[in-house]
Length: 230
Image (cartoon, rainbow, N blue to C red; front, side):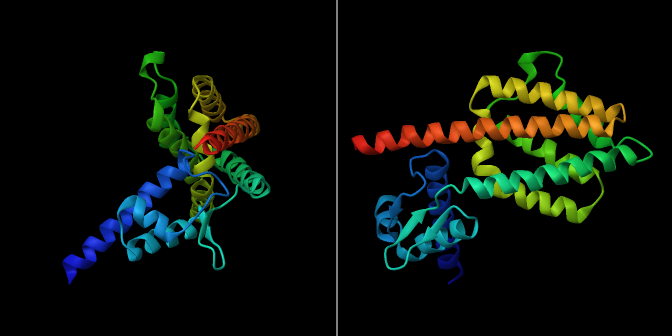
């Protein structure tokens, strides 16, 4: 019995990862509809793990169930994304001020400075590594402010924005900008200039927000064209 349960969980995980990858890579685009049977046939999985995977993706906001007509990749709600970015900025600006109010500079700032000020461009991270480092940069700074509830809410926002934010690292110019802007934010923090750090951070996030929206629309258009030809 335990072995069967573990096998089902493993299959559900595999289906979940495959579908999430399809969504992230725009093989399934916002608005695409499909059935549990479609997924099961394509991934050679039975109904139970497919349903478990889909419910997990539903909880995370990637898909939605349609009354009597299967499932749908959840369309991007750009208004909701805008609101999440606004909330994220509010929290991160507050964190800048809290960090600068501390009697000593948190070790986190020193650690991040070493990461985002490499001695040579060849030492920079690439691909999924730079995405993970960027996410850690923002989460670690909020955590360094010392407010656990602020950090918890910020991580929830980060989780919800991950699907769109990851696109900011598909272009070299955006990676270059991220390194430069992160270094400037950290420089202001080390100098104890809370307002400057908060303003630099806000500008950095807004520029990234604009870039990922443009990239998202471009990816959706490209994927839609491919779908038409199939």
